[in-house]
Amino acid sequence: MLGEDKHHYSVPYQYTGKKVEIGYTSQSVEIYYKYERIAVHQRTRVQFRYTTNESHLHPRHRYYHNWSEEHFMNQGMKIGPNTLRLIEQIFLQCKHPEQGFKTCQGVIQLALKNGNEKIEEAASICLEYDFISYRKLDKILSLRSDDLFSCSDKEPLQVDIEHENVRGHSYYQ
Image (cartoon, rainbow, N blue to C red):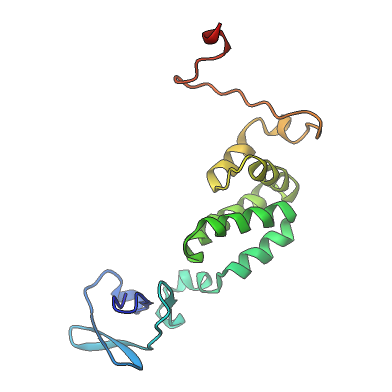
């Protein structure tokens, strides 16, 4: 990261974790490892963003390069309106869109694993109770999945909570 601009610039994946030196002008950023130039980027002053040269990515990570808010919104739209709204809410919680990418990818993977109908119903429950997270969505999918997806709209979802800090109704009598 170039501290003055608070902007991140990529280096070839072989240099990840290594100490590098950064030289910059008003137009460019050059990155050196042991006095050898390993990367050159056009300087960008947009704070908290990333400039990545695709050739710097490890071959297994190149598909991440296409991730964006729009990519995940399109994926959510293909699944259904509740999933799209859940993905929108995930991004709203994040200071920077990149922070929501893995969570959104998890939501998409859950849809592939469980089917669009089930993920739509679970996303609806998450939105209703303001449970905007991958973990909550996964938990809803795993809790009594047979009962969860067969209940009608008029039946409220009853989830029994067992926890040492929950006193129960008999405590208050």
